[in-house]
Length: 237
Image 1 (cartoon, rainbow, N blue to C red):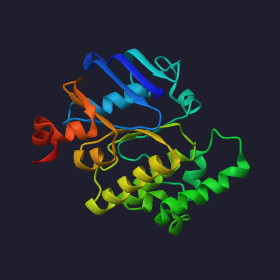
Image 2 (image 1 turned 30 degrees about the vertical axis):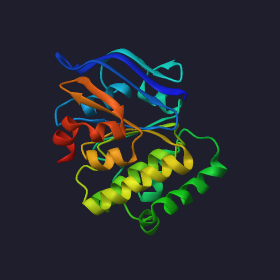
Image 3 (image 1 turned 180 degrees about the vertical axis):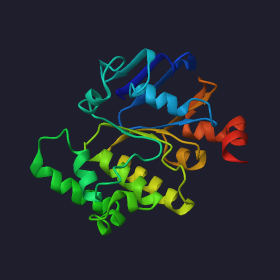
Image 4 (image 1 turned 90 degrees about the vertical axis):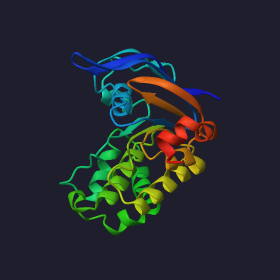
């Protein structure tokens, strides 16, 4: 299997505060890989370091291209899309305008309309609210919009930071079902930072556990689900 994202010796933090220490992980093409960890473990910092939103040292390699030192906007051209924690939609734009913004790097204007329509098929609620301002949507609808907007760039790698945060259980289940469909039917590779370990492991191929800025455990989703320490700390049984 081809490695799409390879992270090696990654150190990162905020000013004098070091959060990540020698993080090593990989995401293979077509995989769903999940990063688990408690609050404050450094999960969001990891995804921000991969996207070069914060200063970092080490190597973050995407299909042979070194990302460390690259501007975040350059990464979109490599096929990376990031759905940040807190959704990050443009509240003053409509649903459809948000989707159009997601396709800003594309030149195939004739196909963008088709992808917008596909977004409405993937998330029918967005189709019902296509002319509504994003800021007036519910939290779940905004999360759907953030994911759909990221997909408008036709990414090779989708980075999702706590997609379940603040959402109702039924909405979360529906969202993760869509992630599974995107991976199964369209082959979208995903790296998901998530606290809802049960749902995340249900759709994941592999997972990593982060504690105090270091990777302490890795394995297949089935292996981590069967691990007593992971079950007690993250799965509630």
